[in-house]
Image (cartoon, rainbow, N blue to C red; front, side):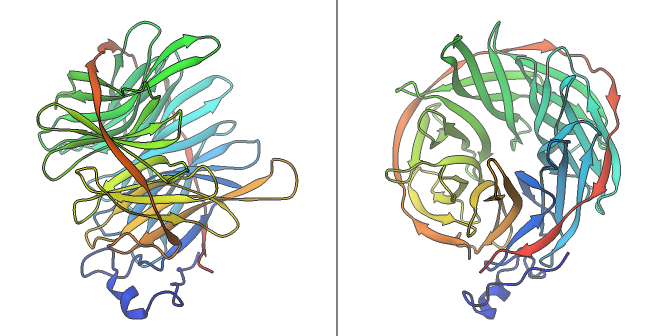
Length: 439
């Protein structure tokens, strides 16, 4: 493991020195920070979060050929390197990480899934601030497959996770150590699928979950998909399941949710039939306004967004070709600017974004390069940082076209019981080195 070399040919030392992620702290990541965390054969990114120490923590997966995969956790050290990288694994299973939350004690809870011949089951892994394992479990929530996609910690120290179990959206609480307490499920009705992808605690204590509603159409055409916003009160009693629909019947999936400083709620949607970004805004009058964002003549598959220091939305994803995309727009739906993020000789995809108190941001993704032979490839996790204006040393400017329209909304859903079955502990092992991506 080694620290990252700043892109000195692109940015002056004075500029780099001012782009600290923590106000008054060390230069953890500056605009010239662009690095790969080389874990194993094939790495995939999932989520990144800012930490209270001014650095970052992230989760994904590391696959070694056909024999299994680890849930991968990595945390920055605040000085341009990694504090730890580790893999959570179970022999004979493909374990993947989808979400991560920082705990009040400086540790982390990561969530995901484990896939084996017996099916897919939810996974939780709790580590302390040094990366030492506190608790881990593969949880039987049957009948049906289960998975966890995101997690937050509540003020009382407990964690709340979301994902899916069978055909239902899953909400699972754990205690501060990560030990599961109470699972509940939200149903959209018989033969309908509901999944939770991103969870957020609002300022009034309400829990908001962005997800998707899947309705079987036929054995030939598959499913109709639409985004949903699920809300639960602070006691986790269901308030509403709001299905977001669009005038053209577009197929969408809710992948992220955030609340602006003025209280407005935003849901980031993937438009599945055309690979555009939809950003739906819930106004104070109850109207839902959707902004469509895409490069002229191109694609934009979004994965995550965050609020910038100046109150704008920073949205990350890919163009379905070889480039990651980081785009900015106002909370009023006006496009501000975008950058194309590309690691040379790879296919780059941005999966997450974390904005820090200085205004700088960390863009988290994976970069895949081809190897000789059919179907061969090698993928690394990557972290690129931007300055407070959103510019990265790996990026070039790109234009976007946008339009705004009114979306429809309807209420669906009810709670159904879930029981927690056996919990199987998992193991951890160290992973990872860093290498510079700037050329």
